[in-house]
Every structure is written in structure tokens, then in C-alpha cells.
Length: 130
Image (cartoon, rainbow, N blue to C red; front, side, top):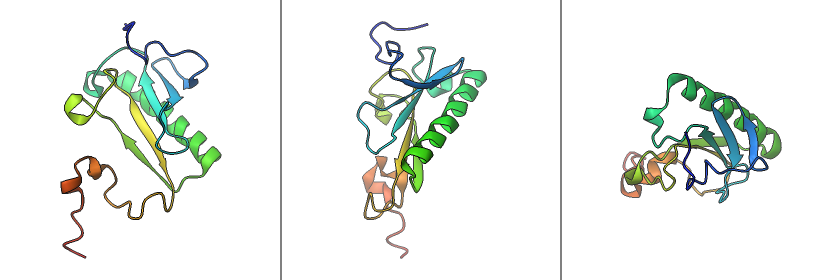
């Protein structure tokens, strides 16, 4: 199943860094850090929650592969892994994809909270306790 208007359904083979029967991984076209990758199911589906268990397994296998390549190429100190599921969560391409974002010491003055910063007013729960 594919959508001829979906950029992830129209990927060229040159963009694909790794693949298996159920998914592919590419480097993000607008990376927020070196090695920022996307893991994308082959089947056009909007939500992670619509994936079959075997498709989820395929995604996670490629997540491991993309992480190993990013580690070898860029030696990050950590990673953020995220899925924007639905427009209210910030999803702009209606084809589920997993972001693997390598993180580096000093890339932010205080990286605490990580993905909690999607809602900045609620991200910092520690300042009142410090």
C-alpha cells in the first residue's frame, strides 16, 4: 500500500541507508544533529498504533542498525528516539516514522528533560526540587 503524494512512499534508492522486509531507514532531510535518521515502515500507515507486531519488530531492528551506524560515524554521547503520532503531536508527514536523534555533550546547555520539551511549560519538573 502506498500513497503517490507521500514523500516516504516516493523515496529513491539513493536515500535508503538500510532496509528489511518491513521498513527502511534514511538520514533526515532536515537533521537536527549529525546522524539524525528516520526509520519508516514500507507500508503507508499514519500511526505507530496501526502497525502490525511484525512491522514494529522490523522498525526496531532498523533502529538498532541506524544507532550502530550513527555511533560508529559520529560517536554521540546519547540519543533521543521519538515518534510524532498525529497532527496534535506535531506529525507533518502522515506516514509513521521514528526519529533517531544523536545527542552530543554540550549541544544544549542543559539537556535534562529530553523529549519532555515538546511542551516547554511542563518540561522542567526539577527546578523547584534543586
